[in-house]
Length: 219
Image (cartoon, rainbow, N blue to C red):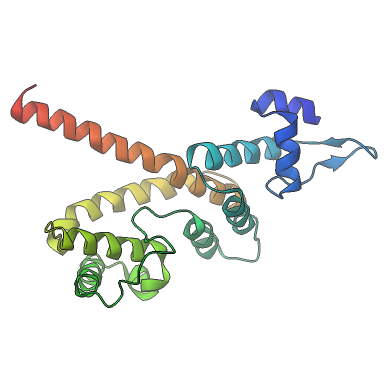
């Protein structure tokens, strides 16, 4: 398809598509003459992913470019490829870059021990080995430490039911991902799931809380 067709099918203006091409968010099309290029379904799929990350995920263009660099890195094994792409995405609960260092805070030390205890009980050996290198691990520790300072501590027993639910969700995610034919498409799906499925899980939880509250306490 030509750029005009890509624009029509995606709902993205030609000017925006050209901007994404300049920024390296879309691979170049196949040149058919000195001024025109041809695009295919992979460009349409990638364009939709870029729009989801920017519009729904509110992810900066520079971060999107970094994520997509990992998505397209054929030199990486699938686990590393997935991890590298997902680590770059924002992690709710992770301290802002300009936040004061809380690593020496007693609550942070307690939270880290609770997370390690939880991971050990779950048998999540990779997560334990990676530890502080993982932004998800750091965000979990930081959030638990903040809860502790607010007087709402969670220990491994409290977190275990939630973790088991997430384990089931992760299994389902990868089962769906493995249907796709190539590692790049599988990694794209994982990024899509992180950007779009996590809001689904959050809002389902809030709807479930509302429903349970109505059952228990009435309207």
